[in-house]
Image (cartoon, rainbow, N blue to C red; front, side):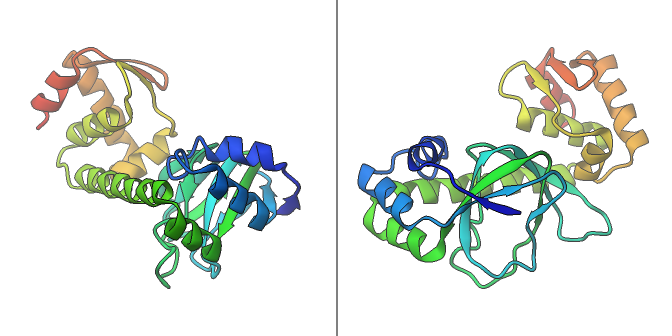
Length: 226
């Protein structure tokens, strides 16, 4: 990790893409740039955050991408990925609990940390940031509920159909994970994952081309494997 200089205007542009700060006032942006910690650059494979982290801060990703893994290094279960505009560290801001995941750079990645004190001041003085913060936490709760559903969904076909539905914004989706990572996320073996893909195609619900999936009957798929 190296500290680097990033201009205030660039930081504000990136912050506006993050849901927590999307509606922040100009005064809040000025406070952030005045009190900011140095931006940090990580190379591929470097740990950005782990359960051993002691500093409380909100991390905004300015560029690059990173993988969020389970804290258990023996299994390396991929939970999700992060890219420019994404935010992490929010859930731990008001607790002394350890971070519950490891974040590792997947490419050269630049992050912008906002200190605990600065973040608390922003929440107290800018209601738009406060609402953005609450909205972010609500979205995370919904995300975790979907993860619980995936892990307790029953058959491999049902788990896979729920996963595809959860990440698809339209009728065509590219699975952003490797086969091994997808199988780990669903808590099934790779062989079971391949069979589930075949079953979904055979039943006429999807068409698969590599990592790209076309949803032929999204609602029918969910109802069939319910």
